[in-house]
Image (tube, rainbow, N blue to C red; front, side):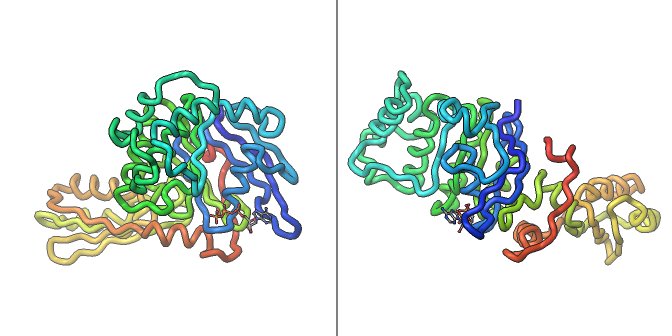
Length: 318
Ligand SMILES: Nc1ncnc2c1ncn2[C@@H]1O[C@H](COP(=O)(O)OP(=O)(O)OP(=O)(O)O)[C@@H](O)[C@H]1O
């Protein structure tokens, strides 16, 4: 089943087109990163998925339910970690989970969830006011997990977290996806979603400008990579052969090192195989990919209007 599907989803606020004819498909079980700079239209899209905002045009389904007509069913089956979530400073972590359970009409033991998000018994009994950022995040994540949602929607979940907090969050997300939960993770920071997302969709100025795995996106924009191979000896044949490999644009030699330039990231493995087949032993490998920030800037034009990246229909589905 498709976890999220939008069809021409559009939202205008007066003259501002916040979301412009967005066609998005997120498959069940995926971790999908929804990216874009501030003001790109991410929150407005999420609000329409949940029927907190009504589309000007187009439609959306979540877990097979229509966002406008069947919002109640959707709300029952999803967990939301909102941006800038609030905690009640004087309530314990455990009370927060109990409260979320009552609100959702769920019976159960809050301790199961507290354990799942890694909050100790002792911490769970303390007021949330004294929690570190990471612990607050764990608790909010736990509240979103109440009722075992099929889909977790997380709006800028990594904002304000230090690298340790981000790693912890990524670990929690990974555990949930192992249980089969679909995760929709919105962020304006590409590297925060890079490590955990199967695919990303990139929004810019209301438009969905690219969808795919990061590797596919690199390919679409022709992301360059340089591969440096230290060899026990450079066979002349390998050097001559390398430029004929699909995705390799050039090869040079300095002493016992071969520098291979690729415009397709998947060409790197083919280049290594070719060198080894020519009889050389690879002693060390260094790769310099186009940076993730460059990719993001290129796709979003650093906030400027630009042409959408072509997205063949079959590549939209993982
Ligand atoms: N209620 C509203 N009234 C008027 N304009 C709005 C409203 N909500 C959003 N917008 C505008 O729509 C555009 C998209 O905003 P949105 O909040 O969806 O972006 P975003 O990608 O979520 O940004 P951020 O990362 O900063 O949260 C922006 O230009 C914003 O100013």
